[in-house]
Length: 164
Image (cartoon, rainbow, N blue to C red; front, side, top):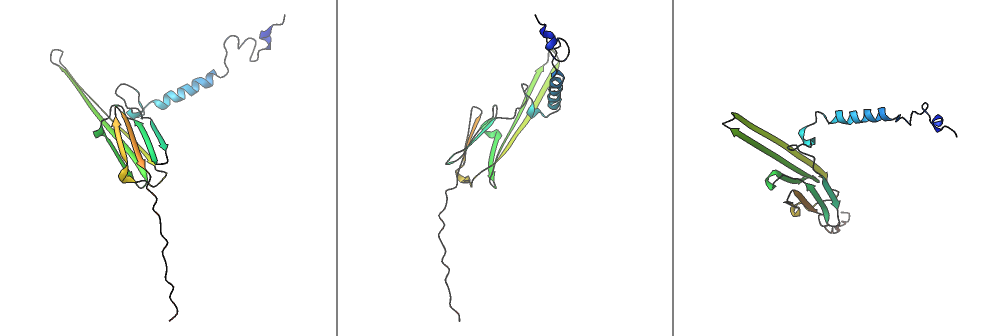
Protein backbone atom coordinates (compact mmCIF):
# COMPACT_ATOMS: atom_id res chain seq x y z
CA UNK A 1 0.00 0.00 0.00
CA UNK A 2 1.31 3.43 -0.97
CA UNK A 3 2.19 6.02 1.63
CA UNK A 4 -0.06 9.03 0.86
CA UNK A 5 1.93 11.44 3.03
CA UNK A 6 4.74 11.35 0.54
CA UNK A 7 2.41 12.85 -2.08
CA UNK A 8 1.59 15.97 -0.04
CA UNK A 9 3.48 19.10 -1.15
CA UNK A 10 5.40 21.47 1.18
CA UNK A 11 7.44 18.69 2.71
CA UNK A 12 6.53 15.25 3.90
CA UNK A 13 3.34 15.33 5.92
CA UNK A 14 3.39 19.11 6.40
CA UNK A 15 -0.34 19.57 5.76
CA UNK A 16 -1.20 16.53 7.81
CA UNK A 17 0.53 18.17 10.81
CA UNK A 18 -1.62 21.32 10.40
CA UNK A 19 0.68 23.47 8.27
CA UNK A 20 -1.28 26.18 6.47
CA UNK A 21 0.68 28.18 3.89
CA UNK A 22 -1.80 31.07 4.25
CA UNK A 23 -1.75 31.36 8.05
CA UNK A 24 0.86 34.14 7.99
CA UNK A 25 -1.20 36.14 5.49
CA UNK A 26 -4.34 35.61 7.57
CA UNK A 27 -2.57 36.82 10.73
CA UNK A 28 -1.24 39.89 8.94
CA UNK A 29 -4.74 40.75 7.65
CA UNK A 30 -6.25 40.31 11.14
CA UNK A 31 -3.56 42.58 12.60
CA UNK A 32 -4.23 45.17 9.87
CA UNK A 33 -7.93 45.37 10.75
CA UNK A 34 -7.23 45.46 14.49
CA UNK A 35 -4.75 48.32 14.01
CA UNK A 36 -7.21 50.17 11.78
CA UNK A 37 -9.81 50.26 14.58
CA UNK A 38 -7.47 51.77 17.17
CA UNK A 39 -7.67 55.50 17.72
CA UNK A 40 -10.90 56.07 15.80
CA UNK A 41 -13.45 58.49 17.27
CA UNK A 42 -16.14 57.20 19.63
CA UNK A 43 -18.73 57.20 16.85
CA UNK A 44 -17.13 53.99 15.55
CA UNK A 45 -17.00 52.22 18.90
CA UNK A 46 -19.43 49.55 19.96
CA UNK A 47 -19.14 49.80 23.74
CA UNK A 48 -22.03 50.54 26.08
CA UNK A 49 -21.82 54.34 25.86
CA UNK A 50 -20.28 54.56 22.39
CA UNK A 51 -22.10 55.58 19.27
CA UNK A 52 -22.41 53.39 16.24
CA UNK A 53 -23.01 54.68 12.76
CA UNK A 54 -26.73 54.05 12.27
CA UNK A 55 -27.99 51.87 9.46
CA UNK A 56 -29.95 53.70 6.77
CA UNK A 57 -32.27 52.27 4.12
CA UNK A 58 -33.09 54.48 1.13
CA UNK A 59 -35.73 53.65 -1.49
CA UNK A 60 -36.78 55.69 -4.50
CA UNK A 61 -40.43 55.16 -5.34
CA UNK A 62 -42.78 56.56 -7.95
CA UNK A 63 -43.95 59.19 -5.46
CA UNK A 64 -40.54 60.19 -4.13
CA UNK A 65 -37.92 59.05 -1.65
CA UNK A 66 -38.44 56.94 1.47
CA UNK A 67 -35.64 56.83 4.01
CA UNK A 68 -35.46 54.83 7.23
CA UNK A 69 -32.63 55.35 9.74
CA UNK A 70 -31.97 53.55 13.01
CA UNK A 71 -31.34 56.16 15.71
CA UNK A 72 -31.62 54.32 19.03
CA UNK A 73 -31.47 56.58 22.07
CA UNK A 74 -32.22 59.76 20.12
CA UNK A 75 -35.28 61.93 20.82
CA UNK A 76 -37.10 64.22 18.41
CA UNK A 77 -35.29 67.23 19.87
CA UNK A 78 -31.92 65.59 19.05
CA UNK A 79 -32.64 65.24 15.31
CA UNK A 80 -32.60 67.94 12.62
CA UNK A 81 -33.39 67.49 8.93
CA UNK A 82 -33.13 69.90 6.04
CA UNK A 83 -33.15 69.95 2.26
CA UNK A 84 -30.93 72.43 0.46
CA UNK A 85 -29.81 72.44 -3.17
CA UNK A 86 -31.20 68.94 -3.75
CA UNK A 87 -29.39 67.41 -0.74
CA UNK A 88 -31.20 65.88 2.25
CA UNK A 89 -29.19 66.25 5.48
CA UNK A 90 -29.89 64.26 8.63
CA UNK A 91 -28.10 65.35 11.78
CA UNK A 92 -28.56 63.81 15.20
CA UNK A 93 -26.68 64.91 18.30
CA UNK A 94 -26.89 63.06 21.57
CA UNK A 95 -25.45 64.18 24.90
CA UNK A 96 -25.58 62.25 28.15
CA UNK A 97 -24.30 63.06 31.60
CA UNK A 98 -24.18 60.64 34.49
CA UNK A 99 -23.26 61.67 38.03
CA UNK A 100 -22.75 59.52 41.11
CA UNK A 101 -21.94 60.58 44.65
CA UNK A 102 -21.39 58.62 47.81
CA UNK A 103 -20.45 60.58 50.90
CA UNK A 104 -19.75 57.43 52.94
CA UNK A 105 -17.20 56.11 50.43
CA UNK A 106 -15.94 59.63 49.58
CA UNK A 107 -16.16 59.42 45.83
CA UNK A 108 -17.69 61.60 43.19
CA UNK A 109 -18.03 60.42 39.59
CA UNK A 110 -19.22 62.39 36.59
CA UNK A 111 -19.30 60.81 33.14
CA UNK A 112 -20.20 62.61 29.94
CA UNK A 113 -20.57 61.35 26.43
CA UNK A 114 -21.44 63.11 23.22
CA UNK A 115 -21.97 61.81 19.73
CA UNK A 116 -23.02 63.28 16.42
CA UNK A 117 -24.47 61.51 13.43
CA UNK A 118 -24.49 63.30 10.08
CA UNK A 119 -25.51 61.89 6.73
CA UNK A 120 -26.24 63.62 3.45
CA UNK A 121 -28.17 62.18 0.52
CA UNK A 122 -28.34 63.72 -2.92
CA UNK A 123 -31.92 63.55 -4.13
CA UNK A 124 -32.19 61.98 -7.60
CA UNK A 125 -35.13 64.23 -8.51
CA UNK A 126 -36.51 67.70 -7.84
CA UNK A 127 -38.22 67.48 -4.45
CA UNK A 128 -41.35 69.13 -3.15
CA UNK A 129 -39.58 70.37 -0.02
CA UNK A 130 -42.74 71.83 1.54
CA UNK A 131 -44.37 68.37 1.69
CA UNK A 132 -41.40 66.45 3.11
CA UNK A 133 -42.19 64.71 6.41
CA UNK A 134 -40.30 62.86 9.14
CA UNK A 135 -41.41 60.71 12.06
CA UNK A 136 -39.27 59.28 14.87
CA UNK A 137 -40.74 56.39 16.83
CA UNK A 138 -38.83 54.08 19.18
CA UNK A 139 -35.48 54.95 17.61
CA UNK A 140 -36.63 54.50 14.00
CA UNK A 141 -36.63 57.65 11.86
CA UNK A 142 -38.82 57.53 8.75
CA UNK A 143 -38.47 60.33 6.22
CA UNK A 144 -40.55 60.83 3.05
CA UNK A 145 -39.62 63.36 0.41
CA UNK A 146 -42.18 63.61 -2.41
CA UNK A 147 -41.31 64.50 -5.98
CA UNK A 148 -42.20 67.94 -7.23
CA UNK A 149 -45.23 67.64 -9.47
CA UNK A 150 -44.22 68.35 -13.06
CA UNK A 151 -45.59 71.62 -14.33
CA UNK A 152 -46.95 71.79 -17.82
CA UNK A 153 -45.05 74.37 -19.80
CA UNK A 154 -46.99 76.30 -22.39
CA UNK A 155 -45.49 77.44 -25.63
CA UNK A 156 -44.85 81.17 -25.88
CA UNK A 157 -45.90 82.94 -29.07
CA UNK A 158 -43.41 85.34 -30.60
CA UNK A 159 -44.97 88.01 -32.79
CA UNK A 160 -43.37 88.55 -36.16
CA UNK A 161 -43.06 92.20 -37.21
CA UNK A 162 -42.68 93.35 -40.76
CA UNK A 163 -39.99 95.72 -42.07
CA UNK A 164 -40.58 99.44 -41.55
